[in-house]
Length: 306
Image (cartoon, rainbow, N blue to C red; front, side, top):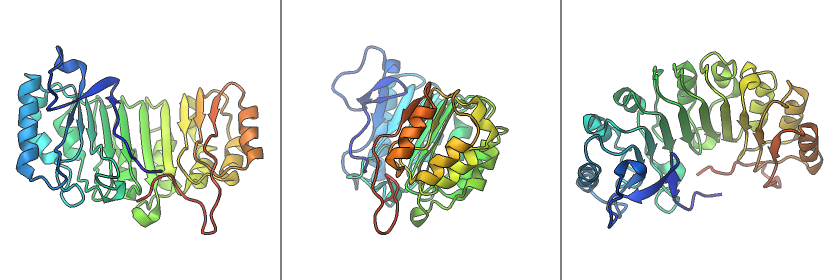
């Protein structure tokens, strides 16, 4: 699977380009896409686009911002510093997608990311942060009172970032989504690195957990089988990974999952028999075991890597 199309909505809002012909009656009723057209555009062009958007959206700036191509995303890091510098003019910002790029613009594992801690520090009212790409991605343990949704999409998420999420203080966070990826693209976390999250101690409000696109999906499933956090989850997502019967058996043999509203395992390597057992033994749960994969001679694979 590749990320071949741009999203059309974000934070429940329709997305409008920063240079669209018409300005919505209420600039706060849409999410704004900020990007340059040419992949090798100079830095000044992206800065000018941001300036134009700020003038267009008025005092406080956009409520939701989707940042696409900023120019040479495969070489130049995501312009978090530019957003931080303009934080006083972005006081209304509540939702941010950092690097919503398709594979034609830049493969996910080539996207140059940066330390996202300053974004959280500069925007204390931010409620939703989505980040795509993990080359150079950093996060330091941080406290943030308002963040409700954190999504880190990658072909390989560095272990230090995973540990920093678990060491951070996000008292309002209800949804966490981590694309662990594969070791070959920097995804070097193991299940034990998720321990603070799975223990339920670090994220007291968490009700939705997605550990997706994981080469170590079986290992994660085994850890979840006895993880205290599961008892208070409404939804659990292990999709896009290399989940096999070993992981599926661990989920069935572990703590009850019948309290879940949904269990998502799409893109998996489960046998037909075990997939059917999961659906039958969790009758009140929406169990998604679609997109069954066939193991190759060289092994199992995640949905997204490079």
